[in-house]
Image: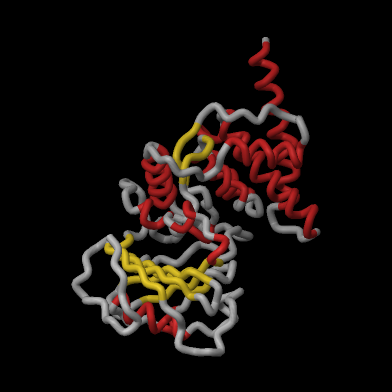
Length: 315
């Protein structure tokens, strides 16, 4: 449900869950410039608007900035969490922009619950903003940069909760696309040529960005639902495995916990896709990550396994 509101109009505190507010306002300052990184550029006027429209106070000391410079989150005086995000007006991706509210229909998945949102156009900054108020997850993320270099020492209950969430998620039907066949084929062919047949034969619904920066502990929650959608079977497990390669014992644990998915053709292609992305990034930047060399070795093994399966299929 949407309605237009004026800059000085207060949002009633009795707004119900899921209410969407929309506005088109300009910031007060005449010195505002197009935004590039919310962490580096002044945005107090944005925070004041969010407080006004959602009827909350943001705890500035709790600010948590994302790695891309496009998001920041705050605790509120009402015991909730507000996540603020911007996008270039001419680079809007409808799927990722609506990920949070679309994910609100998911059941059986351990994640924050969306309560209400506000969006507005910011012409001086050449941006569109959104602020989502959601339930507060007090458990910290496991690794802010997404990958691990030490064992996070996760217990059996944590792994059980993750499996439960991913199993429930995989069964949901959606028109959203988390990782499509065309992109997978293009990337694998770019990096490995025609080494393997890239056809995916099994699909499910995935979070589609399941790294250690989107998982919390000791209580397991899945955060940031911008990209979720249909993906090859085992895609989430393959992504988490890849970001665990810097700690072999954890990578092995992922393999063991999700072996029924990762040992399928779709699961192996998903793992190979992670390796392809790593090797492509390394070739472009020259920067070595903890998982770079393990991914290189894993790619050789995965290609051999997929080729062997192709040979058996022709026999």
